[in-house]
Image (cartoon, rainbow, N blue to C red; front, top):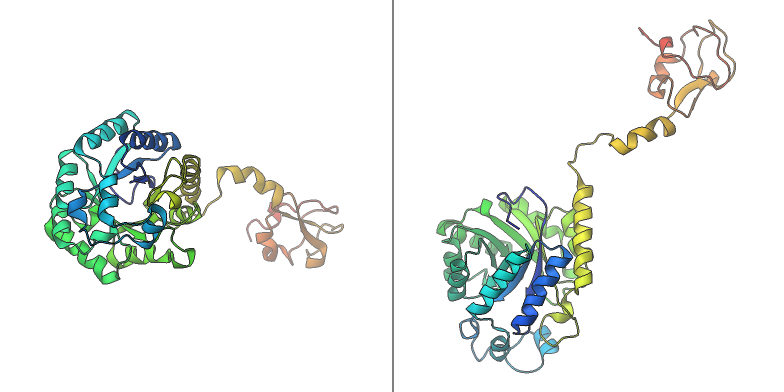
Length: 347
């Protein structure tokens, strides 16, 4: 699976966010790749970090992390979830075998370099790094395609991040900006999905959605609203211990998300209003023709009382009603007989 050269062309890029739902187990991470591929996702994404570079010993867990992962600080949790370079290479190879795009979000400068060295062509900037200027410059200098997540951000902060990326070498046309609500699960009343399109208009960029709500409805709605990328957390088992499992889809739900988004983008079409091929056979049956409402004699003026509109549409179109009324009949008509097109020819 390759990334489209134009964010505004091609199908929605569906990213199955494995994140840290492997719980530090490479075997489980490989199973997540397999599950994402079976579900039909375009990409499976992990998270790349060195725990000591990401958090200090004083960093407390977010409330959702503490609720789902137990007491303790972020640093100990992150150490349990870290994957080394060898694991990344194994995941990259499994993705190649399964024809699914390998992605991983780097959370520190060394991790950016690791993923760049592995040849990753699409870099996800997580919401927490949108104000991290040295990090943004390192990613921007790669000149590769970028996904910028905007959870917790003000509009001005999004603009500043885009400017830093552009100054470093990644122009806006290479960036897709993801709307996101950084809570797990995100309350529906705080999704504010219209902000996705608003950012696209304001910055002139492609947009997408990183979904932390329960279920698939909001992701499908994002696709209908024009998201070019939809990202959703998934897990092999929502009951597993760990910070993100409970707000994640299980494999069968991920497959349903893929089917639903593909159905929506197929239904969106090209936006040109015209009859579709499947409709044409029905048009004759459900539209109407002008017919005689009663016997009409040759030479008698067509009146509204003498005419009616009835199915099928095999005769004169009711669009020509006004052109017909008041003209003399060219022949006799029986009740329900279609009026000839010749009655208004040369009007």
